[in-house]
Image (cartoon, rainbow, N blue to C red):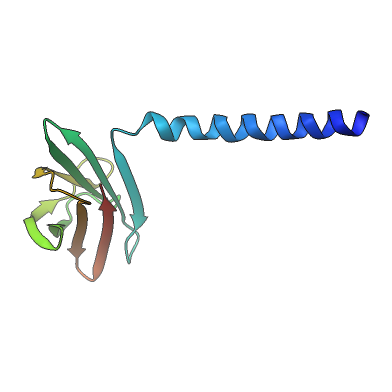
Length: 127
């Protein structure tokens, strides 16, 4: 009988831990975020969230160095939707780009490519 109670306590405890760790992920169902490293020391982040029937896409590159000029391109389902040049600023040495895109039928796939010198950042996210 004691063994059964111990097993039941372990099972219930495991279920509570699993449910507790899933709650924060469910809280952010209205947005999706992906992060990663670039070929050098910089990092990238992509965020997508609904915005009045469209999708707001935010791309950020953080190199920790202010004054760097980066060339970037944002693709939506394979087509270039936006491109430009941005300069990192502030103490974080980062830049960000926000665009509102059409919410197409099916899965929307976004890709970021940003370059500075020989460093390349490549990020992907789907909605």
